[in-house]
Length: 195
Image (cartoon, rainbow, N blue to C red; front, side, top):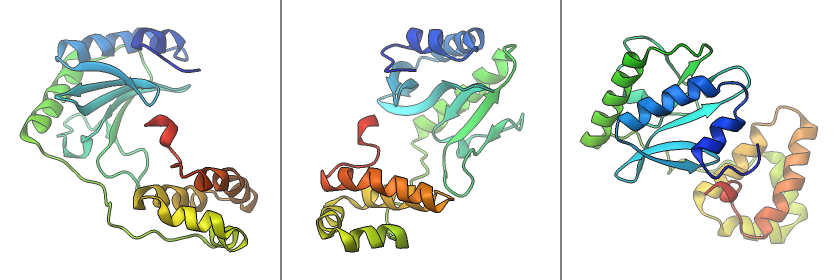
């Protein structure tokens, strides 16, 4: 998919889950959310705060609850797609376009209650940045990139370091470093284009 400007466009371009996405969208809109496109996908907010997202992939479509770890899960459907990395976000994946609309509505009601109470799981923003050795070597070879890196916010430095660490193969780490060094020199964050 290219740049998506509307939820209708997102659904039309989704990989084969149009009926299920339309059903979920109707339930979301009935729950009195504001609808927007954020990070290239439908996002549903209340009072300007993200509550739930809607998305589609090759093998499933689903809902992403931004504070899902706080949700009661009587149907045992919520999963953490990135164990050890994601604290609050939980997904409800669907592989069948027959949706239990009452169950979905009850989860949305619970998400709204959590929002209205102001309950939040906050990210670990104070965690120090650990520079992977490969990135450290690149900074040794390019002191200007190191100086630019040091000027970035803690969160942006962590995103770059994690991006390199998460690569499993050495050649992937090298490719990632080659790609991010110009971005770092330019003072950009890894995910700035999505913000």
